[in-house]
Image 1 (cartoon, rainbow, N blue to C red):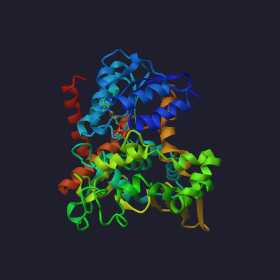
Image 2: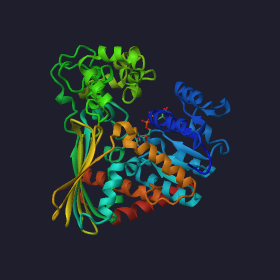
Image 3: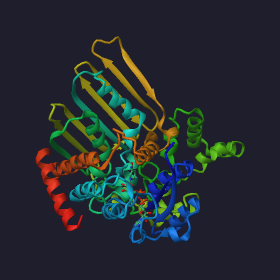
Image 4: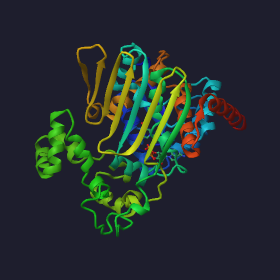
Length: 480
Ligand SMILES: NC(=O)c1ccc[n+]([C@@H]2O[C@H](COP(=O)([O-])OP(=O)(O)OC[C@H]3O[C@@H](n4cnc5c(N)ncnc54)[C@H](O)[C@@H]3O)[C@@H](O)[C@H]2O)c1
């Protein structure tokens, strides 16, 4: 329980703003109350205003308008797109707000450093939404390493397995398809993973190298005669893994994922929705709880139109919007795989693979130490950790709570907000992803991108000193 109810100005009421922060606040009204909103899209702004009974005086059409007024709430929660983080975050801190800022902190290296310098200068809490630190899975991995159970850590092999349909949704058709308009995929998607590795291994990185490219989602890989849009009579509609109506209308991957859930009802409903949806729809008349499955309106459907409950709106979005495009005929530049190699000053070697061609969504990790090995899977369907010690009798297997039941990012979204509130209360939290510690993962992502695009090995101490200098110059030009 927090010391007081904190009030919040929500900046950006899109997917994260509405689905995560607004919903959490509604479920915890004694801890966080959204009392003001800044959002240019009227339907989204109105939705938040209605959900939180926000008077019209505190409904703004942009962050620029909201922050032109003296401070109207204790905190600002910033959920605008990647390239719109720096300016509102700096202005909010100047106005007196403590800030919860979505990742990545910023899409430019100098801006990331400037944000940290601004938080330190204005003495504000600036927390970055690195949600994975707070999950049961990564907390357990962290503790295993920290307690020395695995002995001296020698190597880490970590994979971020982005499912093929998620890749298509976000990084081929969607908001992060083009690094120039958003941010490089290693920053946008993997700053979480780099944060986890940095946090867990507690040693500075000495060198970074990287390879990767956009291999598959290119025009030359389009099946013969594939039209620009899936609905324009695609001849491979029945077999293409990326056929948009299968994803957004039939929700095939959502039900496939549910069919593996640990919760029996969800598992059964997921299986039945794939085989015979009419049966589940009839059952929903008797068990209304099933409506959340039969009338699913969440991510990714909620991203493609503002009325995801209406199949006609979804269909129209596929006919005319970006999410109905053939994945081989998009304007995407984001890589579909990237591998980063890192050597730490304490001698640990790390390989990190991020790719968008997985049959399922999730992370897998292997840590080998002088006394044992940890193998872990953090997935949407299940998460577990196996520990094999070199002199042990066998494997210690631990199943961790299911992600689906815990909500976004395996419960990480909710706990991130709880930790933010605790920090506002003044509780010192060693796991908190404050701006200074989050900067490290961002520096690693920028260094990996430089290494990949130039084919070089980046020395992190030189890279960090240059970044600090660029940040100082940037801060001076922004009069911070
Ligand atoms: N922490 C995580 O794990 C996680 C997961 C997904 C996305 N993200 C990040 O969260 C951020 C938001 O992502 P999203 O999917 O919610 O994006 P979104 O596009 O759904 O939402 C962004 C919102 O900002 C609004 N906006 C645009 N200009 C504005 C202005 N001047 N003032 C106020 N609002 C403005 C847009 O209209 C939109 O509604 C991104 O940076 C993304 O990378 C983080």
